[in-house]
Amino acid sequence: MKVTTALCVAGLLTTLVQGAPVHVKETASATPSVHGKFLHITDIHLDTHYLAGSDPNELCHRKTKSSKNTAGKFGTLSSQCDSPVSLVEASFGFMKSNIADVDFILYTGDTARHDRDNKLARTSKDVVQDHKQVIQYFQNTYDLTKVKLIPTIGNNDMFDHNTLTENDSMYGTLEEIWAPLGLNLTNDWRKGGYFVQNINDKLRVINTNSMFFFNKNDNVDDCVSGSPGQIQMQWIQQQLTAARNAKAQVYIIGHVPPNDDDGSLLFKNECHSQYLNLLGQFGDVVSGHFTGHTNDDVLTAVVPNGKSVIAMPDESPKSLSQVSTVLFNAPSIIPVNNPAIRVYNYETSANAKGSAYGSILDWTQYYADLEKANAAGKLNYELEYVASQLFSVKNFNDVGVKQAFSNLNTNSTARQLYSKVVKVS
Image (cartoon, rainbow, N blue to C red; front, side, top):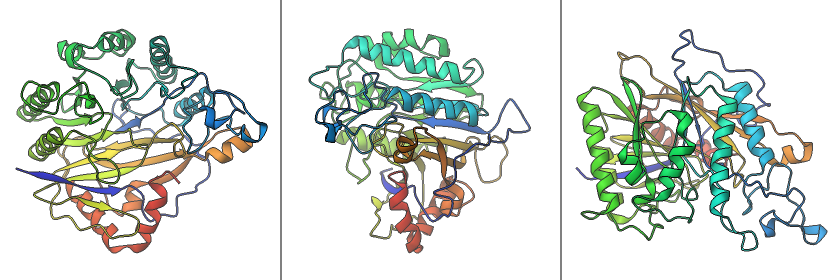
């Protein structure tokens, strides 16, 4: 069955955007062991060399003429600069104070800073230290013996940007750093950088290595017979089949999504085709697909026998006749846009009417107004939107996402507003 994608950028009609800073903790569930919530963060890009009051044209690492030294305390919006320690620590501080009652955490990669500065080249030691530091932030924020942290590899998380092959030494390095997380890192991880992690007997997370599909990784071939991508594709199919046979639902996570925000391919051609067809075939098993990388807020539907439909600010998206699998791309910590953190609500009843266990019911999107934070010298995360209110749907299973696209199609005000939210207010 051939499938293609329909992309809808997450940002719709709401009066909640521009809310006041969040100071109240989320209400805990009556069942303390399962709250029905999980955290998704992505693209931290920690830069311990970031210098407030430096020149963004120097990657916020050095000062030049005084008029150009505009790098803010908490980051420099829409620049090539990465995330200062102050931003990362304020973000984890917000999570600790306001997002305590989550069952698990999906972290979709890109921990280390970009290797963009020719005058301050990123070393292997820098990459390892960034990984260690971010895991320490997680440990200081959550009890990781009770809240499972599931990280994946980003395209900046290895020693050579965008370059990853089978049996890479980075897998062993990360296995050592991630040892406190208690992850199911088998020989599949040591050879290919992917693994499956059970949340419980009803829900599993398939952690993919999107670098084997990524079209900028020139060290692996497209998904032809015997290639790392093809071997991983077969492994994913095996995991999905096993989950179906066990009557379990699956979340798939990776760093790079199959498509960029404009619909262009981020996966190699054959990998893209095989991957989407796999998602279409196992739509009954996959309750959600979670990525980062683009820094933007994007909702995508994999549609059987459909056409690519992109919800652009100046046009109406086509209505969807059927949805197989829903893909969620979250905005990032790194201030390409305003920093963002997301909390999902998911179905925890095995007998829920119309929704499988693990189906996404809703999500709450938080963001920090970086310009305001830099001016005030203090960073607060605010409520940007609640997805069910934005899209005017009750959940984000196949039926709900179909309705969300329909609502976009008929609401010109929503289309105008989502263009703001896709770039994080």
